[in-house]
Length: 364
Image (cartoon, rainbow, N blue to C red; front, side, top):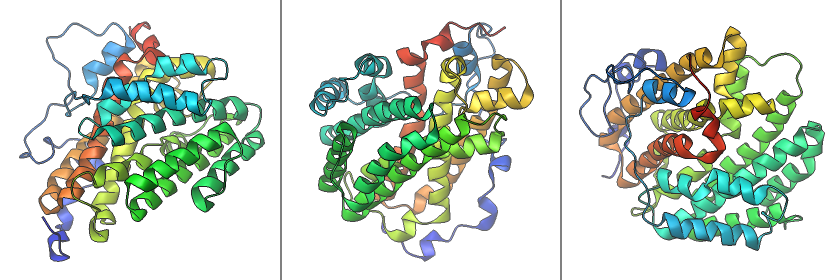
């Protein structure tokens, strides 16, 4: 439907903050709001014996599993694209891609997109996995060592400068693909959000060098930057119906939905990756932040982390149910894309080999 200024008038009392939404029942977007269970836990199910069981038993996941029928082609395309730009030439990178399955994550979070968009999503996920691992390795020896690779990325994304490295050449190719497929405004938002992700990696490297433990709030703030989820949102909005109107895109509820979905999408993998991150000394992880704050075991830290994610997802459901009746078709595509990332990150994290430790560590 077309939107007008009047259609965007949402009663103030309905935009409850996350604290109020935490206990409220919610339904899938577009459906009537009905009381929802506190978690997805089945009271008759066997007691959780591993961290993976604990997560599955208590995480609220209202979005059912879906996948894109073009996943196999996207996986082959990712391998060819990485090889083209030399990104798997370095030791360990090819194995990392096998263990992270970027095309699978793209398939799970973007089940309805056509093959060309799915390929862009899969290639960018693979690029971010490579870039993130490289930044972690370099930044471990001092945040200042990251400046050349981060500055190159910013110059490409902001100023259209030519690349200097294989990573830069791959980013340039992604940027050009997005510019060809999207409107100028969508491509500009993609670049802006991608720059935020790049800046976040410097914040993370600085945090990793701190001797004092990070507060939960600081940890989640940095995690929001390094999530790298929001660059994908413009790819969903114009699939069938063009670009979002400014009044939709910049509406406070739409901005809040973007924040909620990006946080939930990245915090869910934090639950499954906590064992790996703990072993390698990672700091920017929601579950580990709660473990440091409460000085408790990892299974005990998972519970408040899961509750925070559940609160976030329920607020997302509630606000989407409120705003959906006045959204255009493009707006619905846009928010459905956000929900897809929450769903996709959960189902991907449960099975990806990189986080297999969560199924091997007991939850007493």
